[in-house]
Length: 360
Image 1 (cartoon, rainbow, N blue to C red):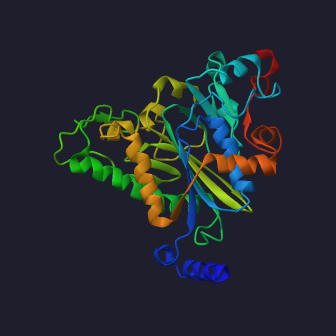
Image 2: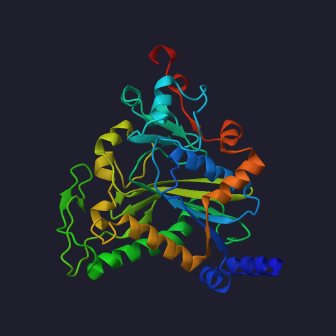
Image 3: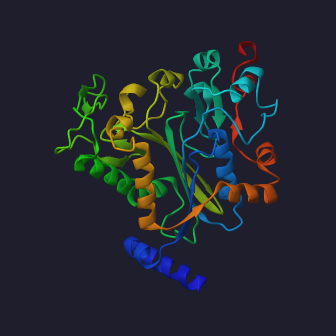
């Protein structure tokens, strides 16, 4: 029976019947909501890699949540090899943000090192590729883990994975959010046009949006542009992928809100999409809260609700709990601390490893 279902999926994928694939056989997905779990972003990344590589059932996963950027609850003190004294202190208090780099990211090129070091900002190198992001308490995290047997029509390459995630998950999610706003669900709103002096574009800056319940079309369309998720001309999330022989992960940090000062920790990346040009981070990014914070539940609740609903239109959703994940990590990997200290690729960066010794 399993083999027949797999063959049907492959046949439909070969014939280009993506909709038919979804309609004929909806694969199961384990939906793990980590809001309120107490996990830090570091701990989330450590567990995501464990799930991707070592889930004994090889399930597809949707993992969502909000996380403290620095304060760990499952990983007790990080080893001295990873932290200097100031970074260890930061891990034991609630810091304002963390810098997360892709596995191949070079801090000297992507991070304003003097400023970040002066402010003792926690830097993490994750197990996936992609660019560099600043995350904080308001970042909204989503991750999708796919397996070839369940999603044979999604080729295991970054662009193909992003196209699938946009079409199947995020475009429907943002359409639902925009419908809530246009239906009068938002209580705020006077669209504010902002002229971008660097790009010559005139965009909805969204810094002050209000809605009186009448017709409203000010929310820009959500699209996949180059390798970015954008609202109109502005990027709304950072994303990355890791692809292995047992599956792939596509994780995204959506910008609900952020402190503009934290973006000063990032340099203008040497490689950037043409549509960005030389726009600064503040001119290039947009906050979801600019458009959706007026919704009755504050916007974040609606975002995650819309995401789960969209996921349920593609998959058969099965709710999962954190304890189940921690159980197999304990049994198969010796626990989260042992996994982090061993083969896990996610690492906290120490300044002595990223700066010349005389500057540390």
